[in-house]
Length: 146
Image (cartoon, rainbow, N blue to C red; front, side):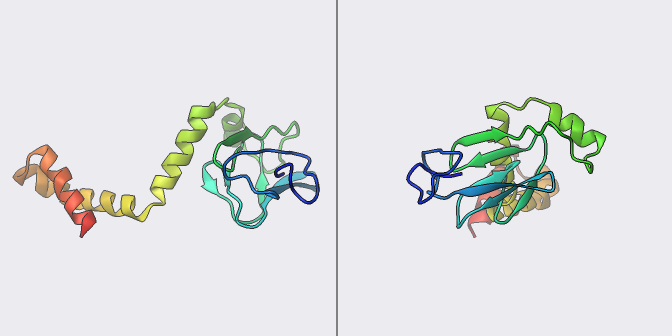
């Protein structure tokens, strides 16, 4: 997968922000589908960044570049898939779901967000007695900045 100006013409051609000339490869091996990013291309699986070859399953959500969202549809179920995974894969997520999933995963990996959450948990009981509700949020902002 890549842009139309790649050295070898890709089967899947996309353009736009974040799409590299040679972006990633989709490979079928032993009846299983894999995605392998090429170079430092922006590839996400279910909201998480992908930096090496990964197995794709029915219902997985892909983001290539900054705004190309796709859903994997495999007619044959994986022999390792359990019933909970099958139910989740059959749901029909829309564009907003995929975008929110990406934002939430990015926030959960952001060290500032993690520190702010820990600071809030640490000060919450103390703030309840000494500060008004918005005072605790101000105190968290000061803790994060120091």
